[in-house]
Image 1: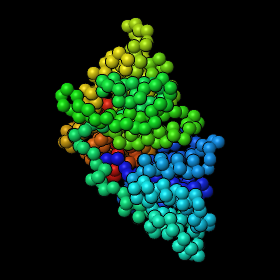
Image 2: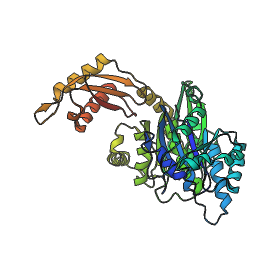
Image 3: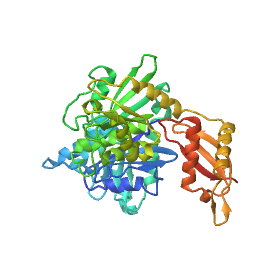
Image 4: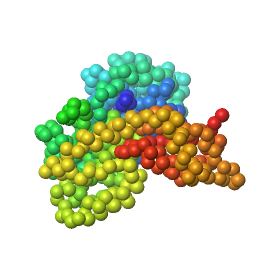
Length: 437
């Protein structure tokens, strides 16, 4: 289920980034923060009252040689398109400005729920001096202090109250959702068109043509239903300078969050680059199923060893993706594209596979018999039993005498034994140690 989205908008110097950092800090437990997307963090995840949500900071937008109001308008437009709830931030020190009024008019037309925060209300006198903000026509203003963390609880209560319900966010259960991610110009949009058999997405040789994530639902010959999400290419840190492209990165990361399976697209002509590994890392850390697609394979001169050598390079560079199958494809000639839906269905089954505790513990005990548990300072790790607690990704809990004794190398051994026994192809899974009480 995708998370609801909160966008923070407002004119410069009202404290948007300060509030963003508060939401991604200790006052709200951080779930995930994606580093390295831009020079400024624009995307994070927080939790309040048990509700996890994505936060967008529009404070980093910088359009050179453009009028001041163009920046404000772009912030509001991006928020209106992407957000479920908009936090409109103002400042009690300057009062209601003309820029605030212009932003308010844009947000009022959006039809999205808007929560009005009046920042920099650092003392009781300032907190009482907020009545003029009712003139913006956006409901009750919430006096807050980003620097001191005052008033955030009441404001966030209002934010969470406006989020869509879990039922509204839940998508159709029988749909397998997948997206294509990768550096710009590796051929993602061409692959989308080739898989669908028609031109649904604009294709261009200019890197960065795709600006939005585009959902397309289709069925295969066996009646299985898929939703395919095309995404903008994720550029290297420091090169994401154009404002609309910066937000296309955020949309790509959201597409990963919404997907069950991620197709990591490589360019066979250019080979593997450092950014490919970072892009794939986003999907791996999110616990998504993964297929590695080597596109433009028709452009490569081949002999009997070409595919084997390329696979060795991939396995060496993507060691954390040893579970991910590799398909060598061509959007131009449609080579091997027919295998993609079938492979997606196999991985979906792996993601949703549940192992009974009795069978799981039989495998675990056999593994321990072959490779006894480690010791540390005379104390031996004892694994009492294991159980699977969730799917997508499959998650297993080991009940042990002391989690500190479970070294990561032994966790890797257990993971390998489980994967060998139950064939979790294409999906990561988690092994968590808990102390038996």
